[in-house]
Image 1 (cartoon, rainbow, N blue to C red):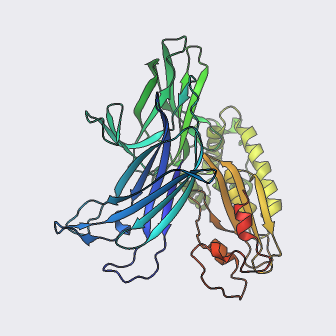
Image 2: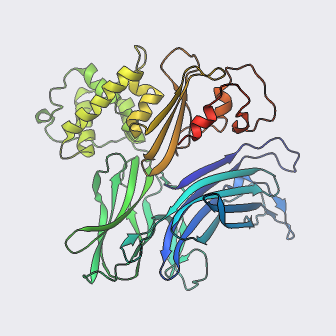
Image 3: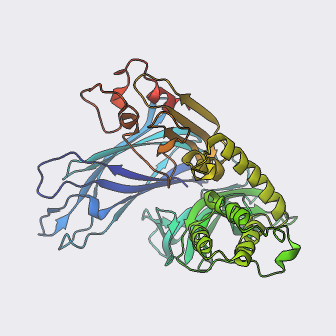
Length: 483
């Protein structure tokens, strides 16, 4: 998921409206245009309640945001621009609406850094975002573009508009969170370079898989036959009204007539539904590996340790059933959980996970707190082992901390988790900050790490970046950026 939530904590200013926090959602995708090359397309949704409104010439209220971007390659500026984005004119600031910006930039294949600055022209708040971007479309080889999640689409005869793709006006969905009322998963993608295949058609398989373990959900998918072409647009939707809460990938896979996979693309999304029911196994539980789990305390512990890898709906069920303490329902749920995780070998999947739980208990657990309930234990079980760890127990002006770096995590890359121990004694470190979507994000993590120190420093910004070098022996910021 290439999505970032931008939040800027505004300083106190004298303005006509109250000081606000500038908020926006950012997302990007990459595509390829035959004969022209690769291009980047990004989507920026400004939260209408987070910007300042002023009367315009027509007597209505309107917000204005200045957007500046720099695209760099090896510190060399490749593309740059600055422009103003106007929000919709409204009669009453009680009825504000979010507003969208879509931008396309042609770029040769390669790795880039996008530096995006968003400024509220009338409130003064400003936020900067840095995003690594990679474009890689091999000529004459079958490729699938990034998958764009779509809010809505319709046919159009206005090809010059920014939202138009292959005869359709496509409104992007910037976020990837589908709540109870979001029952349709709409998406757009493009398949390239199938015209040189020996076959006259390809099979286009669109399906949903679990983000953890990549198991395919057989009830959510479709296969379409498409004639080969230089560009094959894919614009479709799935009914997800019966998709339970959880973390998923939408996958588009291209196959030839022998069922050989030629290319694939996937996008991560989250689903949360409000329901009191969770699927449970309806067969004869006594003939499964769960059949002999008759000790209620052991079974309860086995279920409790599933929380780090459970969706919101499953977690709610775990809480409710622990209170009810119905051993048969608990057995059915436990088996169904692992049968869905690994239909071919649910017992093997459970044993492999239990080994991790036992290891986490030895490493992070205490008599009072189970390892899987600690922040470190939960992150390890949910995302797997980090690619590297920077650890400091004796930095003179900072609490003991660990920084976990993940090269790849779900569909994200280069993500960091910062843990610290405020009591400086226990091994129960608290998760202070992460740049992983959905995790606690604390811009002032570097300042909080140093609240152990009584030293006061001037000219410190929100993020604590300017603290570098203020304290003797300080390595926190270097460790965070040592990726």
